Structures are given as structure tokens and as C-alpha cells.
Length: 231
Image (cartoon, rainbow, N blue to C red; front, top):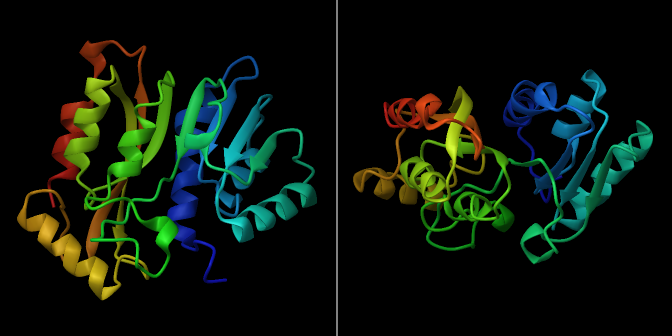
């Protein structure tokens, strides 16, 4: 379905990041809030592979994706572990949680008139990601794209008291949404302004865990910045 985001490679990567950077560290029924759950498959796959005693509360604006997610949640009897609301986290009462997780919209474009408008991440692609880092959660796991002004995200995190706790990087090929001529042209312009980094048809996608409790001596921000701008 074209009205639901579909990229198995990216979804699998997000799922692996959730498992390795969040779920395995969750003690004593930790609670997790998710921004933009999509069809729910990354979290559902993670829950099926891991013992997790807490609750994940997701927020998804796309009604088609929300319905698909709830159908699968019911199918796997995960209603007590994964609850998704058909609404926007930014407009909610900001539920308390140990972690905020997201594969946020990160497509840069001059406007929202693109193949899938809900994937619009602002003019530089980092707008939504940077907003998530202003909500005040102690730990934030987000996917950060090398063509979406990654330096601004690292700077925004530092301004809000975050250090890079851990990160994983995946080289990805430009896909259906990022190859739309209007989007690709805009990304090329961002590269000219040192705001997008890619090589040929490939870019880096990083799963980054930002934490407020992390000792600054252990901060991996410089290492992340070097990797994300190396293409």
C-alpha cells in the first residue's frame, strides 16, 4: 500500500537498533514512547524476539498505518505490551517514559508536496528529529540520516544536555522516496551547503541513542559526526 511507508531494510535496521540499544538495557518494566509507529512492524518484530516486561505507547497520524499496526498487534496478542494512538505525540500530554524512540520523517524537500507527505522532515530533513530532542526524555533513540543535516541534530542534542551514548550505522541505497527527482535535487543542493553527505547512490543511516545521564567523557558525538560526514 502506497499510503503506508514500506522499506523492509530500514524497518529491520530500526528493529535491530531497538533491540540492541534499548530493549536489552530496559530493567524493571521500563516504559517507552514511540513517535511515528507506522505499521508497527519494527516494534512488533522486536517484541516477538525479546523478553520485555514494559509497555510501548506509540503515536501514528496515518490512519491506514495505525489500523494495520493494531491488526497485527491483535494477531500476536501484544495488546498489553504495545498500544498505538491515532494522534500526534507533539499534540499529546507527553506521556512519561524512560525512552523515546522513533524512525522520524527525515526526507528533506522544499515543501510537503512529495510522494508521501508524512515523510517530510523539513527543508533540511532534520526538523522533526530535532524537535524530538527538545521534549526532555532522558533517553532518545532516533534514526539519523547523513543527508538530513546530521551536524545540526548532534548540535541540537548537545544544546539540550544529551550525549551520544551509542550508535550503529548502516549504508543504504537511495530508495523510492529519496529518489523522487524533486527530493534528490534538493538533497544535492543541501550537499553544496555542507548539510547533506552521501556518495553516489549511498548514504548512511545511523541509529543513535542520546542520553542525558551519560558522562561527557564517554560522549561519542565527535565520532558520530566524523562517520556521518565522511561520505
